Image: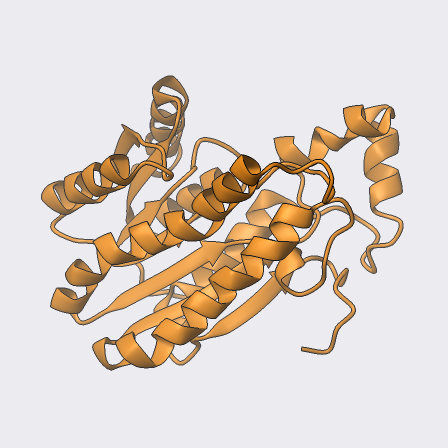
Length: 259
């Protein structure tokens, strides 16, 4: 199936590993030009070289922290300067730390709101002018199944991530006239470094932790970053041109709610 992404410009943040990297790689494989960033310059440049080698795509790689407004402006500006504009935004960032009510300070609450909500606002503000000029745009954000169903031990995530879904839904009628779509993609248990880090916290060997974590997933396994990226690429494509304002989980059936 032709996804209509050849020549499009896809900007993916936090793309040096995990789901961000898988999304960037998948866009490149579909013929898109890709701009990626991460907080560590050496990591993002290594991934850029890997994407070029595997796909032959044009890749712009920059060090940028999405919680820093100047970094966001510089990254989007450099992308527009290099590729002529932005067609697709995948707003991705690390999640807030684990912990309950008595453990979280005011500073941690502010930081969680900044990384989860404000970073997405900054990125959208910067890319929308380019999308309006081009009369086409796809804005996606990677969040968590905590948007649909609270996750034990993730108070900050449970409290802030649903706000991003509200933000995206609110922008649908405002920017739909410019042919810009907005969708939220919510991973469940995906085989990333962050997920595997839970083995140490649980005091289990990695293989045992993975097996235990899969027991209450209806598909009885942990998803891969590539499986997650497949959904993101579809939603960013011409094939999903009438899909907007959706919050969809990629979780093997973990979320039990109907909506």
